[in-house]
Image 1 (cartoon, chains in turn purple, blue):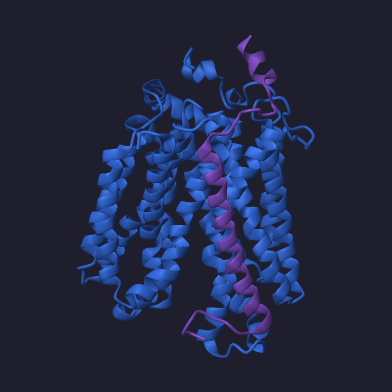
Image 2 (spheres, chains in turn orange, red):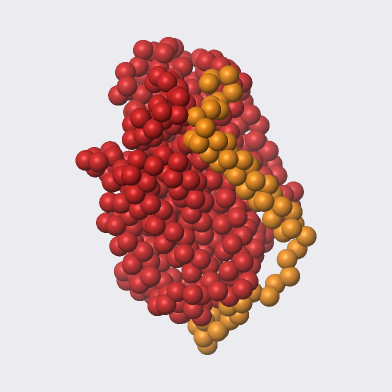
Length: 57
Length: 435
């Protein structure tokens, strides 16, 4: 019986998220933005040959 | 700090600092090499030594977090490695410094402890985001260390090791003080009761555990392999293209190559929480697009999301080879950026599933999956390095290692009912009537 319950349980999640969740999602967007900035900086170096770590190039 | 967000913050802070400790030696390796007149081979050994403790250490740490609770285990790791880091600041012999820094690098095993801690506090429907935030934010410690430590301390690695060690002691004490092993006493007790040899063998012999371990070797194992491999790859494989951009001399080529390589590291770390969020999203939407893989399990969409990540990683590896073979540096860096994101999908996707499949044995499962998979960090660079053409290694790994792993993943994830019970020997054989 319990086995059947597991497989037939809601595959689609209908839980209401608590308030922490939206802050968590905000943090992950900020982290992604940081990653994108580093990527753009690296692209800038690759495409123009300039840049480098500050004071090193 | 008795709420779950507080526990998530403590775990993330502890893990962030452990990652700083883990990679702090690498950040100062040029200064150490200069002081002790190290050869290139010795420098290579010093760099690779950072991973030596990971496979076994993570297995033990995972078991310990189930048996003793994450706060005690995390505190022992932070305080132990912190004390050795402090001592290493005053060492004058390279041999002793080397041994002590290998011990400090063991701080990296803490990953599995925090995963277990977070799993003991959060519910199924938010697991992906919670584990992603923990692991992704903590992983940034490695990048921050590489970027900030040499700027703050210059070549004075002794002061850095001393300060990192002292702060590790403070965080370790705080973790012990404020950390609570699980949301309920019952949940902690279930994990404690499951930390036996038979439970360990049971988990290690499950097809799903092996498939997830291999999936993590395809993602995190690859991530740490690429961290070590990529700077040398770009400096060697695109030497002419980088020179044409105006980077003259070995030092400037090294800086350019290192910056291109950093794209992978940052994207793989910082997109990881997003990968967990995507796992939650697929779960919410109920997306199960792939044939043959289970569709009716309560967490089936998460399994399908990881499948998507594994396919993307494989495709990106082949594209990296193609960009290299055609000598297209620009394309290679663009592919590398996407590659890093796909790797994060794999790492975040894996640990959005592990605590759900092995609900009663999160530490043992995490230790096995997070530990054994790091062997990839040692194996892949060897394949890349021994390929006759420096660009072909990615395609070889993709076709001869990743495709079979994906096929095994599909096969082992086909069970619609209790997939964790299938493996070498039945559940009854290993555990009797235990849940």
